[in-house]
Amino acid sequence: METIKEKKSVFTEVNNKLDHVESMLMDFTKSKLVIMDKEYHLRDWMTLSDYCKKYNIKPSRLSNWIERGVVPGGSLIVIPELNGLKLIKDQAFMARSYRTRASAAAY
Image 1 (cartoon, rainbow, N blue to C red):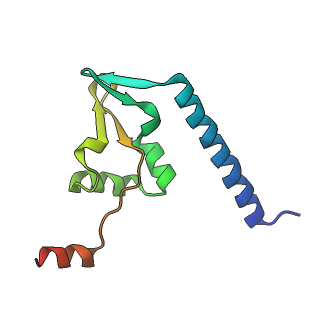
Image 2 (cartoon, rainbow, N blue to C red; image 1 turned 60 degrees about the horizontal axis):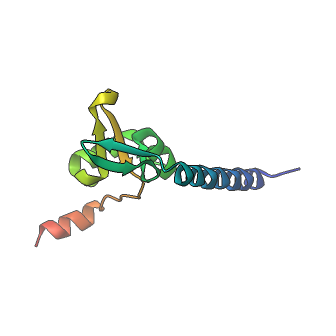
């Protein structure tokens, strides 16, 4: 009988393989988005919802990071033609802790 830990490990392994296959398909098709003559390769971008799932954060936290500038403006695309769809760069962002911000403000 499999334990919960073993099932989670198998799920994680399958999920990682599926991510790899998806990445290979994106590279193969060379999917890109062109907005105002600027090209964005879709393998580097994801929806806000997918970002929250991948990096295990709440949507409200991501919205807060966007408002506060933790996510730089160049790492976010808004596509008005698709009802304001937002895409975020597929990279980890991290807000500084309160203690770090307070010490930086003191200088």
